[in-house]
Length: 126
Image (tube, rainbow, N blue to C red; front, top):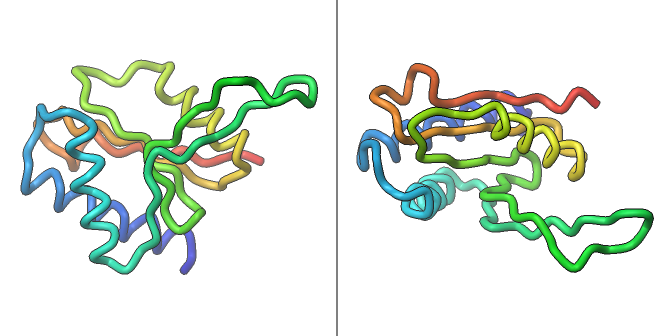
């Protein structure tokens, strides 16, 4: 599946979750609900994917965790916050760089309308 088609399908799942649950819940609730929606669409989804970190060719004793990885292609970073801070965008860009994935979606479920200012496409400018 082409990345734009996959992104479109994921956004539809995000809309479904938001419309059924509304704003203001914990990120972990949205994560579990979104996993169900993505799987209903026949997509492969993994959550809390460990991302080992290396420095000077040495693996650090701590790792990062990706919220969701869909079809081993798109990283989804979930938030449920009053406002998205610049650091969230930087974080996702770093995840894309470290994993060599082409696209990430930053999603904030704590909004009045999921259609406006809630889903951001972050490309990896390789």
